[in-house]
Image 1: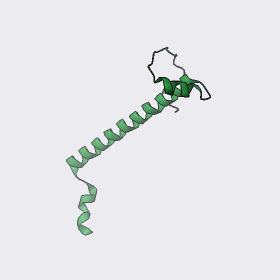
Image 2: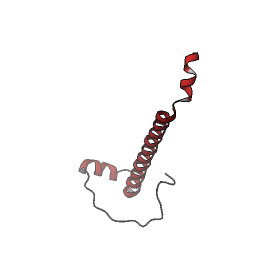
Image 3: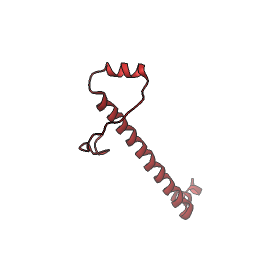
Image 4: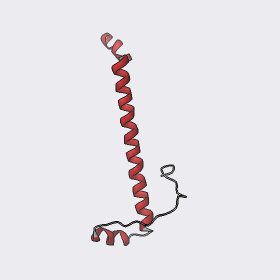
Length: 79
């Protein structure tokens, strides 16, 4: 996820409460658990950002259409 967050930012210790079963299963996977969790969080942040931008774009287009109408409306009568 390039560009989602600053990979050079300092790390901070936190406390999480996780289901024991899923934690044990995740710890058995190869690689660093912290890195995998960080990537999953970065993916979720990126997804939320995309959804926010999409919602803002839809709202702006709906506002434009309400104010000025749609270009297509002028041509629908000819179909």
